[in-house]
Length: 139
Length: 139
DNA sequence: CGTGCCCCTGGAGCGCACTCCAGGTCAATC
DNA sequence: GATTGACCTGGAGTGCGCTCCAGGGGCACG
Image 1 (cartoon, protein in one colour):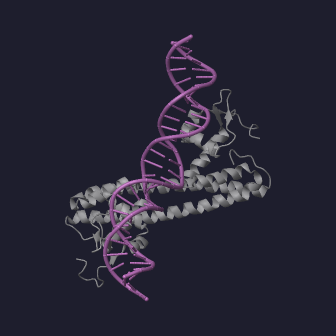
Image 2 (cartoon, rainbow over the protein chains, first blue to last red):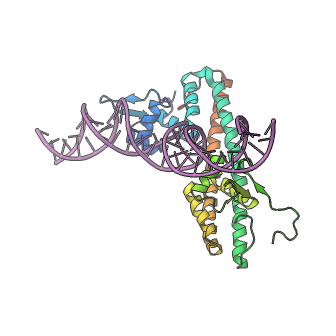
Image 3 (tube, rainbow over the protein chains, first blue to last red):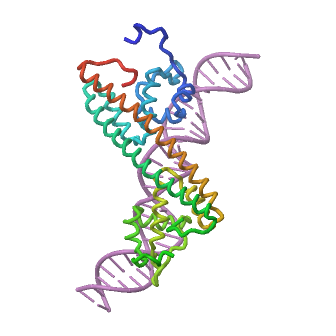
């Protein structure tokens, strides 16, 4: 399907190149394969891993989910669903929706806390401007 | 200064109450005292910790900074500045401003990543609606 | 043919931030 | 006066997510 209408050939990537493109270290790539987050990674004649564009796209998804705080265990469940084929689509949607809500909450909490931090900064700025000690609960 | 114009007496709090109010466990409170994040915590005749409203306010600040991702080591620097007295105000401002920027970036990154997650959700929803397998880079 | 270099495996080690535990003190309650 | 319960200390242990290491293999370049 992709081969029709596109011009570029399917590329493959060494572990080092995959690491630099995905942002995961080579050790982490090996670790992810070992714990089942990457499956079906090809090998060359010498037994070295060979990553494809699809692998890179999947790594991009992993990166996105990890960076938004999804624990490894849940990534494993997600990876398992993906391996489970098309009939797991509803479960994948549910999993990602739940995560999306957590990200939403995370953002809301961060904003709230940022407000608090900025208040504190203003408090210090006022204290510095007044050039005298100002009573505060806990500096 | 506070005693004038306010009605409530200064309260004090047991470790258990402090834990439930601050959201830190008793163990964490002890740990924080041990590593210098809490200093000058009073003790009663039997050697038990007695927390004040000021302590609670400071714990609130610690909670806010921790929850926004500030590592313990930086909290220690901040606590040290606070112990250093008023002349450290500019440094406290600088520290909090730097942290504020990191929080800002964090929020921006989360939003970006949330977009990606939502795209994926939409992709799955479309795939489910079409009721047939749809080619995707890496599900 | 030798020297590098990148990669392999299995398994140990690490950093962070707690969290738990053993053994003990003290005050209040029954 | 025995029990209970909250708290104390110093120090060991835990969970997560990597990260590092020893020992070895194969290929490419000079």
